[in-house]
Image 1 (tube, rainbow, N blue to C red):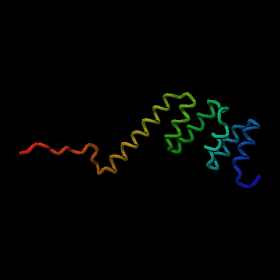
Image 2: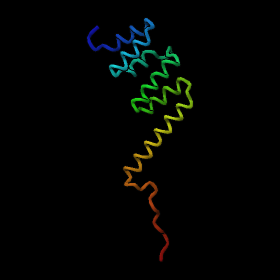
Image 3: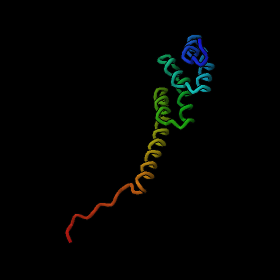
Image 4: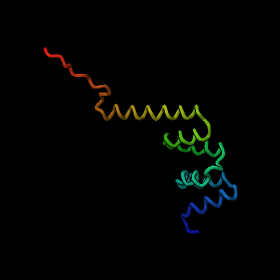
Length: 110
């Protein structure tokens, strides 16, 4: 195993059912998605919630929503999805020159 070989390290930790250590190694090294991929179908609700919470704290609401949904946390999915939509709306408002609903031009002839 080479230095920085997170795949092998995380696979070993998951195979030996040392999920807490695997999560911490993945979190500290920016490899949460790799950890989630290695867990695959054997991920528990607790694992999925930890992954979702990590992404929520990182403000990655799309992935947070995905893992909350996989964990069956529908209220949290709605919560992070609402926040994501608010962010998108705010950015749209900001980049549209503060004109969300442009005024219509009158088509009547005077």
